[in-house]
Length: 175
Image (cartoon, rainbow, N blue to C red; front, side, top):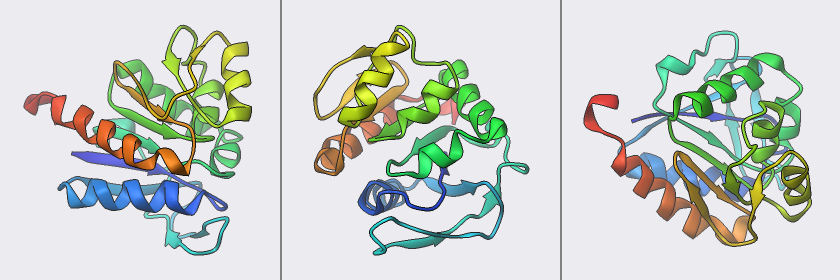
């Protein structure tokens, strides 16, 4: 499956790298979609550096089967870009798999796609989610239809496990 990973600087290093590696190891293609192509992106801890493969101006949701939104400060940067918000909204509206960890749901809040959905996020984002009508639970991983969410780096193993399970359930014709 083709997964778009939306990313900008100051992402949480482990929340990007560990799921990215797990998706690749499971045979999925992961493409880094950023605000501009070819931009070097450093994690907030400085242990991981990557580069955007395509910019949001070139990315189309129909090119991908799923969306991965790592946490850290990256989602806050991304939600300021209307094209990035529309990109995320398209995945939620279509029912394609969406994986968001830590601050990742900030992008989904900006896309107005969390009302009535069950999810979790970093502690400070949980209140934001509740304010816009999401059903927030404080647990390591939450699966609600096409959406997998987790709270923090300690939740990464559960996040990866449930994300890969969801990808396995996507019908072959939809891949």
